[in-house]
Length: 156
Image (cartoon, helix red, strand yellow):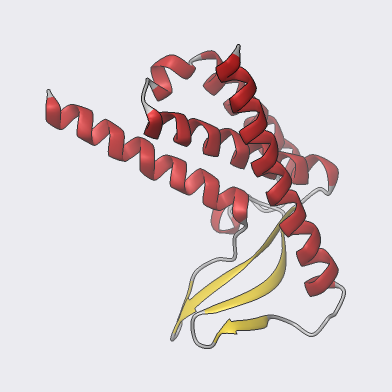
């Protein structure tokens, strides 16, 4: 029960942080109408993007199928959590980050009909698609899971 409460508190706080950054993006970036704000010239801007698809803008306009997929993915991960995440601190962190990212973007899809993205990285002519904290949580969780899986296979 203690682990559940810790997990719930961590996920809730990360989802809240994600929601606050999205509200700030709406308030300061979309409403000002002046376009992206340069944070680090030639590398990083803050921009307001309404993503009506998923990663890299795929599946544009498929809000409800993506929302349903998010709910099903979350349910599956909770149901199979022991086999998906295993044990250990790194796996626990990955689990918390993955739940937080899925929930953060799911809330946007259901409430707004799109996901708010604001982190905009580029290098010269190369431009990485805009993303948000929830996307970062999901990506870091995936990297951690790949790392722990690779490490456990190497130890066998």
